[in-house]
Length: 299
Image 1 (cartoon, helix red, strand yellow):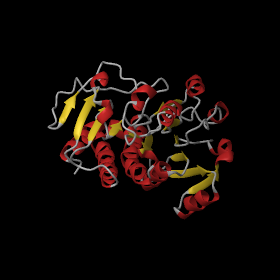
Image 2 (cartoon, rainbow, N blue to C red; image 1 turned 45 degrees about the vertical axis):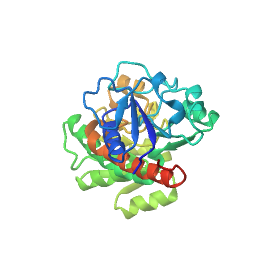
Image 3 (tube, rainbow, N blue to C red; image 1 turned 90 degrees about the horizontal axis):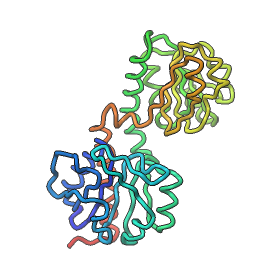
């Protein structure tokens, strides 16, 4: 149980509702900022403005999956008020206060480092990323069906990257009968692709592989689908970019060329927010219970 822990949940989307539910079930004292439009009430949770939080008593701060933007602003789906996380705010928290976020960026990493507070990026954990790949795959299949006029079965699908999401996506589209080609850089990834019964290629050869591609799915978080690559694709090609913003695609050139390209980070929160929220909530509960066992005593 998290009895005696004071936890602030700052902003977020429907996934955070599962987090809030889990924290209150574990008997934590939960403060909600950026949720004033949320009609549902949780026993053990109170809504507070950022400036009214008991900052000096907080043991943990839960941020949205996307963390902050580069100006410190948090996503607040259940609020019209702007919530900004600053270094000064973090410095007011106790030294043991831990910050939990899905991902980070230069701004968030910098202010937590300057405030000397621990930052935990949940999506860097293998368990979270692998579980989260399930709704990501379902959402990708949904988008592929919605935005094409041909079947996945028999189509040429290119998946870029064989990380935790790329592997799940490649396996699922192969299972649906697509002719799946997977691009990677590491020799061990190339070997794994072949072991899976898929067609492998080195990412440096992407330009020669995209001819006749029907669907191109990117998971690589840097510009890889360039104008030169897009110019070699058929105009019917659908690009689904699953990488975090700004994605790995030249969206301006894709639009100019008439190739449909969709940036789709955060698919789990769109297609299955309850499941995605439960994945995050369960891992958070485990981590917080570990923290409690490592030093914070209950009253």
